[in-house]
Length: 626
Image: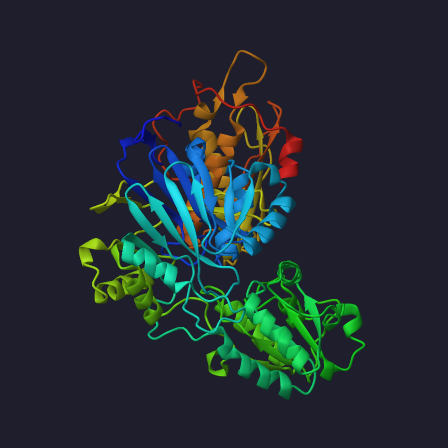
């Protein structure tokens, strides 16, 4: 919807109309969770996006590859989108952009060189390069998005190179959007946090601060990235055989130090994992990482070098099933097998939700005889997110009138809000929000408006197919209780022509196959005697129109209720109906079958007069579905 008015009537996510005054800030992801950071800034007839990330699935999301925010609100208002600004290149900030571009255009995307280089490759792979224009920015660059948003990129420090905090000037005031940050005073790449520019905005007056809350529960400052250097150096220099090291591919500062230590200790480097190869190539091309070409040896050739002279750098720090180290731990990697002389270093902490996968990988590697170095006590990993003292420094520099903690789970947001109060921000000037909540700002007020639709979109491995709630529930049923398939042969005049065939897969039950078959027979009989007049309609032709899908559904529901009641199990039930011609001899049923004592529903007599039914399901289609 488009309009020339300054404050037009726009549609909220639930379709209602409301007249919006002032600035609206709407997070669609990143609240009450870690990941899929996506935020909308809205003023008048213009929308600006800040980041568009993804998250990774939880254990119950079977077959799901990535989790995206629900972008219904953006699709409904796509004509109002003026552009996007990106804070840095982590997947939870740019990973969703190619997917979104398949659904709506974004006129222009502004972001750091490294992030935009990585995004370009993702867009080419997804075939959406024609859906937007990419523009790179540097420190203190200012861009205009639409008529109402002016954005200055302020260099900050994070676990990824080329990261920025945003100063967004709007008609109601300046908003500081921190992005991911910590205050690292000895950055690996020498690019210090631009504290002076942040302080300038604080002196001029900041209306509201939206600040990263990831480590809000942890006291003190986050240690600098350089703190891990001596500990990594000790473990690498003391290793008697190969060093196998895993970390986040996007942690360019960490990777740079690892390459520096490999040279220092006389080791050649072999790279494993697509993302590790891609990120290092991009970082070296753009000058964010410096290492001679002869430091790297193809993985097929590095096996010919002495173990004491090799270092394998790879993905898999989060226990991802298909990552290089995970495959090695299962003995499935075609080129690398674990040796008892290997030293394997996890230079990363598990993301919430990945802990079990990580410890299982560590256990498998230890059982293979390797020395595994991991955990906080080893000092081989530091966070890229600020702790409480970093948050206090940010609040002291920005001096915001209002405060909204973002990028974190609920307890983190609450803790961050208490830190803000300790720094003098009144409690009634702070909002704790969830995805879809609307922060309404004027020069004097902050309020929570009517929320828009928010949620998640689940993508399968192709990153094209959406796994909806029904499919996910069916997958959960399959994983937890198995599946029962039931084949019923029913004539077009509503007679069971053969005994039902029942097949169980993954179902644990004390009931034998005969009892399940008897129960299935009773459900089919009950449906034919009490529902047929609603499911079949005589149209004057040779055979009635039968709603075969309705017949299947009735049998499935009835059998599912019985299994819950009798056996306390809830498997996925798939009923397949094979139509038979009218006049086919009826199956008489088992002599020992118990009678069904359920009362017939009102209007259940077999006297015709049912509703219009769907066409019969052809037999070939049923066989294929089975």
